[in-house]
Every structure is written in C-alpha cells, then in structure tokens.
Amino acid sequence: MNDLLNEVAWNENGLVPAIAQDYKTGQVLMLAWMNRDALQQTIERKQAVYWSRSRQRLWHKGESSGHIQRIEEISIDCDADAVLMKVEQIGGIACHTGRAHCFFRRLSDTGWQNAEPVVKDPSEIYAKKP
Amino acid sequence: MNDLLNEVAWNENGLVPAIAQDYKTGQVLMLAWMNRDALQQTIERKQAVYWSRSRQRLWHKGESSGHIQRIEEISIDCDADAVLMKVEQIGGIACHTGRAHCFFRRLSDTGWQNAEPVVKDPSEIYAKKP
Image (cartoon, rainbow over all chains, first blue to last red; front, top):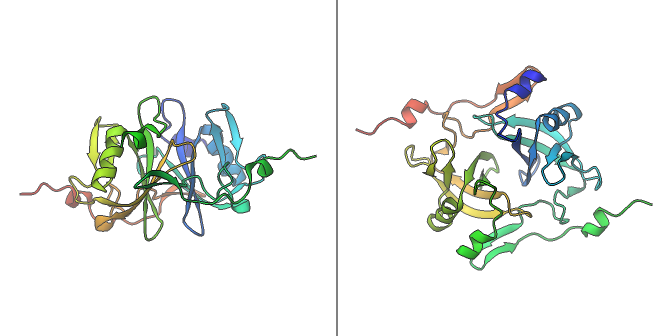
C-alpha cells in the first residue's frame, strides 16, 4: 500500500483532486480532495473516502446521507496528480443539494444556470435519525 | 463576462481545477487548471485554455500538437470550485504521452498498471514543423 501511495504526486498540502464518475452512465458526479489516509481507506474499503477541507477531517462519502460511492475502478493520471474513480452512486444522489451530481450549473447566454432538478430535499437527506 | 468569472471560487493561487470529458463517449480525458484569463479565453474561443502551473503561462491545449479541445458545454459545481467541460478532442489524443486520455494508470493487485495503449509516439505529436 505504501508503494501505491508514494507514487501519487501529493500537492503542497498533501492533497490530490479526486473525480467520481458514475461507472454506468459516465456522468461526472463530483470533484473532491483526498489526502494519503483518504486514498488508503478508499482502496481498502472500496468506497470513496475524501478529505474534507472545510471540516479538516476524513469524510466517508455517504456517512450521514447513506449515499455511499462504491468503487468499481481507480486510476491516476500521467502526472499522478489527479485521481479518477468509477463508482456506483448509492441512492443516485451525489450532491449535498439533493441533485444527482454536483456539476449542475451550466454556462448559458445568461450566465450559470441550474440545469438539473433537485431529486430529494436536502433536509430529508440529512434528517436526524430518531 | 466579469460576472461569470466572479462567481467562480478561485483558490488561494487564483486557480480552479478543470476536467475535460469527451462529449460523446463520456471518457474523462484529463484534469488541468485554469486561472481567470484561461476560463475567459476558454469561453470566448470555445476551445480549452488552461493555466500551465509548470510553465506559468496560459496553455491553449493543442497549440503545439494540434490536439485542440472544442467546447460543447461548460459547467461549474455546487461550490463553484471545479469546472467540467464536455469537449470534442480533436485528433483523439488528450495526453502528452500519446494516449487517448491521461487516466491510464489503473489500480490493480500489482499496483498502478498502464491500461491504455499509446496511440501515437509523442515524438511525432510534438515534432517540429519544417
């Protein structure tokens, strides 16, 4: 595992951008960041684990929403400074806004326009369990 | 245009990661970086223009290889800190190694394995014109 992780070109903050792509549809779901521990856990658990820069802690995607990303395939790029994961998006919702994916703000003649429906209300996704 | 660019959450270096995806096949071709000028030129020219961190200058993708990326669609994500472009990859080669895309090092039981053929020898791609 150490050899694998050593080959990654971590940036000055020890991070690398990681893209999650739906393994069936090819839709790019989101881009988030991984540190060494996150990539190691992703590989070991076969589920996406990111480093949350805002919360400064490991973020097991789906830990509160249940919307886990099961890993089908992981690749790094030619310079080893980006990660691409093909995943099964459990629940069909990758975005915290309740949309299927995060790249829903599409450029149009009138600016960035929301181009994807909200599938589920975020207050339902993140509702406290009784 | 300024309004569009002001909505992007540029990082502390004034950059944002930009993903290029083949608009027909859905293959993720590469991840590179854009500054404000690069995104502006990308939008205006309808061709991908990045900021080369190694060369510290604007990089019109395909400027030396001819392997331009024609823009079909541009989106930003929920946090506006990542760009996704659907592109037509002219010449069918996005990677400087002569491969169709950059994410060719796939995780296997024996490490990161090259999982994509070289389509064209890089020395041919970047040969000086007479």
